[in-house]
Image (tube, rainbow, N blue to C red; front, side, top):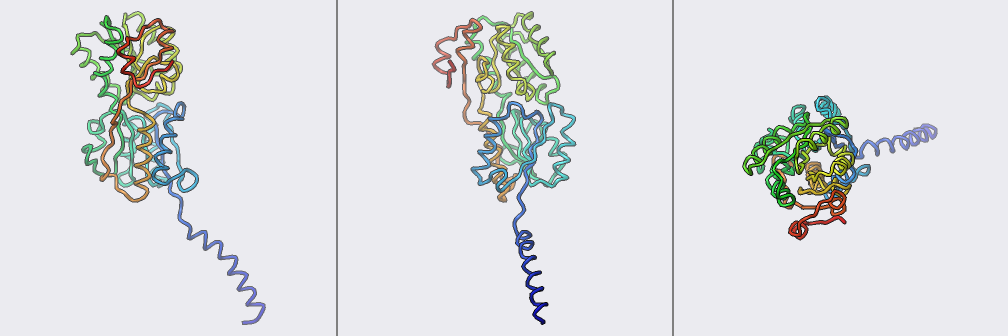
Length: 327
């Protein structure tokens, strides 16, 4: 080989080395994050999700990427959003805050792992075969929101003993609404109470719903579990205070933002569980072998400042049993 040819060969080889090195670097896995609501009010939940990922050794932007897809409370958008994530060939899909995103993802793929986060019963909703043996490509965590209705009614009865009519606020378009209404009807009937249901899917309907609650004579209100209400958390809190109606919210953040009380599982921790499962699946575990996670602790949180603002005295027994009192 001539000297000039040898130098050219070395130069070409050197230029090729970085390309070869880059080609050998592992491709960063991509998580598809599918939610039926919006990013509004999700700061604490997303922080919990990232904590779970970190426990499994993953950090967004460092060794994993996340593609977020928000349905903005339009269930009809979920199938297309799920299909887009499948087309992108994400490594795993996290479907959160109700069974609707998980059902859309399940319909879109039978091979990409899915980790759901819901407030309902995933067996009844058709997501898994059983809690211990989910089967297929899907598992996740549930907050069992609908299972808490009896306990919440008991707390409200202690709060307002003379209450004979219970108000229930629901989103008419919510995937879990029918189940929540049925549970509430059975629970109030068993206690000999009347139930007044109001429906709202936007701010105008929320105003009308609270006016109807005031006219119905309902002494207390229970907020149904729905991402729509998470997005409008502060607006709903303001309405409960202006109408002076004692309200049981379905999540802690509403009480932190001025709502009266909640009895619920910790949402952020439920998202942490999802993040942890996503990380474990990225490391090779199979969804079928990961049992559905359930909350082990429920917290009663009371906002004493709000109670004073609406002229309500909290019984000492509730204050002493509360897990957290905001003053």
